[in-house]
Structure formats: structure tokens, C-alpha cells
Image 1 (cartoon, helix red, strand yellow):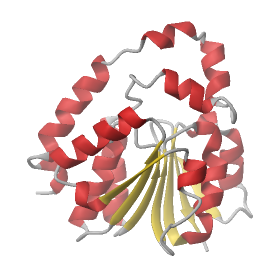
Image 2 (cartoon, rainbow, N blue to C red):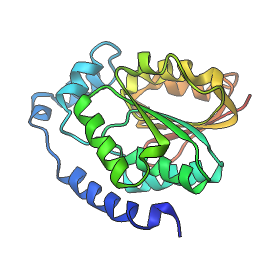
Image 3 (cartoon, one colour):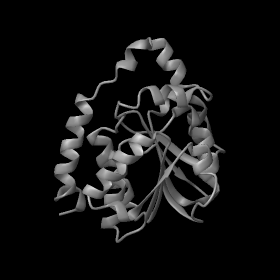
Length: 218
């Protein structure tokens, strides 16, 4: 038995995924497919774009959530940084792994205030809020200071265009062997080029559901 598969977390996640599947946003209709792709890859318009879609959950899939738990649990992670809290589904999976690893600290960041409120509520209901620090604001600012000296795992699941910049903020603190998981990394070709480069300091491979899994080598 694990925190992930028992009460209160298991029924909470089941309910949250149902809510996520049913969620809609009137704003999504104003963007063509081409415009959405452009905005997802924009380094200057991400706040306006994601702010307009604040009613959408943009959650990881149950499969990816389980993968996050397994990677964090299996690597014995104690210090985790997450870029992109949203409503806190991925945060719940990571915090559950910390609980089952014996404790730790998860720093996550989200710029949309309404999502921060809901994420805190979900983490409280899941019994995991004590392990999580949510930093409200733009991650380029919230993750630019006061980070732990040694980070075991980094999840990138916010504005895709910022993946290289967020990695740069955290990179010097990633321990050798630290894992970096980037969701929907195909929208950030600059990031993929960086982590896949032979001399880039990572071993990296695509891993189901558009996830790029990387390991810090030194």
C-alpha cells in the first residue's frame, strides 16, 4: 500500500481527473490551432495566453502522474522543484512520493492566483500540504532565488517556451543523477536540443505521452 493508492489521495485524484476532463474554457475558441502553437512557443506572450485559459486544468494524464510518482519514489527524491502547479494534480503525485520516501520538500510555482488557491485546497485535502511550498508569481522570478543547494528532481510543466530558462535557473543545484522530466517537450525544441546534446551534461530520451526524461550526469 502507498500514499498514492489509499485514502485520502486515491479518491481525490479520481475526482480531480473527472473534473479536469469536464473542464472547458470559452477562451480556447478564440485561438486557431496555428495561433495556439505560436503562443505556446512564445517567450513573451505566455502569461497572457495561459491567463486566458485559467479555467482549463492542463493536467498531466494519470499515466504521466504515475510515472512521476515512480521516478520520484524510485530515485529516493527528497527535494523536488516543479515548474507549473496548475490545480496541483502533478504536485499531488510528487508529494505522495516524498511522503513514501520518508519526507522532504517540494517547491512548486504558479502565476495564476486562482489556481494557487485551488492547488492549496487539493493538497490540504490530500494530506500533503505540509510537504509543499507554493510560490505564486512568474517562475523566472520565483525560482531565481532561495532554492535548496541540492535538488533531486525537476518537473517542467509550465509555459513550454521557458523550459530552457527554468532549467538554467535550477541546473547548478541538480545533483549528479538528478532527474528532469519535461511534459509536452516537443513544444520546446530549444530545450530538447540542449538536453540531447552529447556535451550538454545530460542523458535524455523521449518517454511516452510526450514526456522527455533526462538525467543530470555531473
